[in-house]
Length: 140
Image: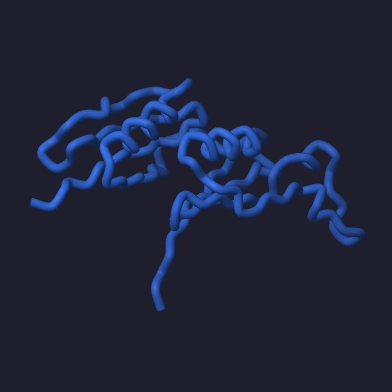
């Protein structure tokens, strides 16, 4: 059996905004979204404060997936414990993704040619998520 790993982004009440941002920046497709209110049942009433927050969402970028949730309790801390590597085979696509993700964020390493990639860079977006963009070298 193959193991699949999917990044799961813990947000602080702004998962809907993040999903819309990544949908546009990564040309992603929304697979599913569910709010805490939609999960409510007589056995598990939903507090009014989190009713409209995202309990689970998934988007697809080609064959890759990203999952999201808004924390129902203590806030998630922004940090560098998760980095998502995006690999493309096209320099122009890498540039477009890099530029979209840097909007409101911080460039950690500019997108530039390196010995191992025709376009490599690292950016932390406005949600505190760090992305490494790698353009695969063309075969020689």
